[in-house]
Length: 242
Image (cartoon, rainbow, N blue to C red; front, side, top):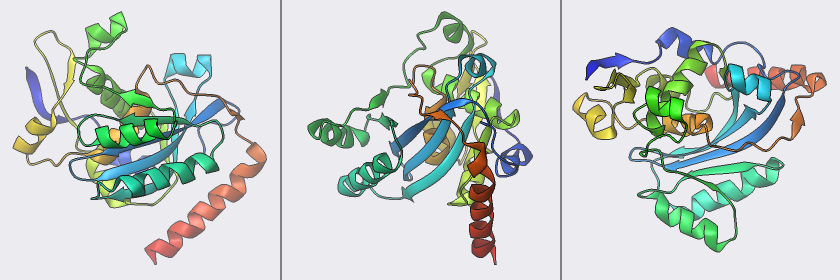
C-alpha cells in the first residue's frame, strides 16, 4: 500500500462546509437520521439528502441540519428517545444505524419497537462492480465520497454543535491505496497507530454517502423559508461565539 498518512480533505475545505447557503434549492430531497455508537462518541445526526436522479449522477448533496446527540455514552434509552424525537420532527425519515459491535443492542431494541432502519455493514465489499474496482470496501467508498462532497461544496453543516470536534475529525481522515490501486481508508486500529481517535462524527456523516441507502423523498426545499431559517442559524451561532 502507498500514500499512508495523507488526509482526504484539507482543513480549509472543511471550514467551508460551514459557510454559504443551501445547496439543495429546487431539488428533491429526503431526511436521513444517522446513528453510531462509537469508540469515542455516540452520535445522532440529521441530514437533508438529495434524491434527484440527475443530482445523484453528479454526486450526492447533503445538508446537516442537526446533531441532537454527541457524547461518550452507550445509554440505549437515551439513544432510543433521541431517535424517537427526531423521527417525530421529520416526515418520512430514513433511519440508518451502525448495528455492529456496541450498536447491536440498539438495533435489537429498535427491532423490538418495530422501528424500521437500514443497517450499516461497511466492512464488506461494495456491491456495484465499479465501486468494487475503486474502493477496498463500503467504508472506504462512503468516507471517500464524503471527502469529495466536502471538497466540491456538496456538503454543508447548518448547526454549530461540536464544531471544533467536527472540523478536527473530517479534516483528519487518513487513506492509502491498496495493492489493487483502490481507495482504502485506514481502519480504527491503523488510525490509533497514527495517534488519531476513532472519528465518530465523520463516520455518521459518511453513512449518508453509502450508495445503497434509500432516501425517501419529502419534496423540494421551500425557497420562501430559506432566508429566515438561515438567519435563525446565524443568530444562534453569534450567541455561541460571543
